[in-house]
Amino acid sequence: MAAPRIFNPKDIILFQTNRFVVCNKPSGLTCSGGAVGENTLYTMLLEWQGRPYSEHPIRPVHRIDRLTSGINLFGKDKLSARFLSKLFEPNKDPLSDNENNTQPTRKLEKWYLIAVEGLLPVGKTGTINLPINDRPVDEFNYRVEVDSPLGGKSALTEYSVLAASNKLSFILAKPRTGRRHQIRAHFAHIGYPILNDPQYNPNCADRNALMHLHAYKLFIPGLCDYFKDISLPKELMAPIPPHFQETLRGMGCRMEDFGPILSNLSPYQTKQRPGARIYSLPLNSPLNTLNL
Image 1: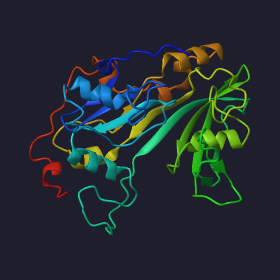
Image 2: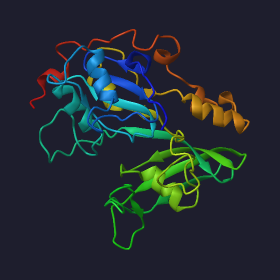
Image 3: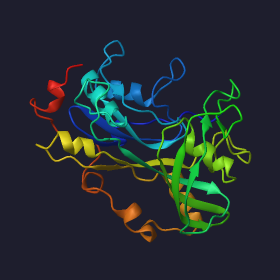
């Protein structure tokens, strides 16, 4: 068994305010929960803020799989986490407690970068529109089923092929729904499993290898809508992890080859030491008037 890796939370902070923190989660690190005594991104953030587990105001706003790397968002208190969680929900106004409100959708958009086995035409765009049954097929190896005869929930994944060589394809994927293991299961179902995916790729012999699924970008217009009195980025982007970069180099790819898709990094990443600055949301911000 591979030795556990040691992470420093301050090395993976992308952006933070006094209300929330955005992390670039490494592959292999659980977001929260996990086995008893397991080191998770959540427990690391608690330790980093000097707060014991019995006083845990930090709350995950959303979760990505343990083997997935990339953007992970946490609220620093219950109010902030509740507000940000509503940004993930379609047709919900984060400032309203009315469950039947009909405000315009403030759903954030998510982009993922993946490397799959098999060659797809470069420049090809497509949509995988197949339902997912998220009831476990195997209780010891949790998997979901795509297009199951038992039915399932609608699932839609859009994608664009950025590069292809050396029996691999580099893809930008945009899930329009948020089903468990959606991208992993969808691409495996159409015959292009994600590289080093131990659950959906039958060719993955090394169970300790790092999966090539990276939560690259979040577009969150709701932050700017409600916090107009300070400068907040609409897009949060997580740099591609080293193991993924090495694979891309083996494909003969350079980051600059993909233009604004990958090279248009925000100033808080390129000019600012991660975790060095905390943006303070004013006391009269909408969060303080939200009745939870």
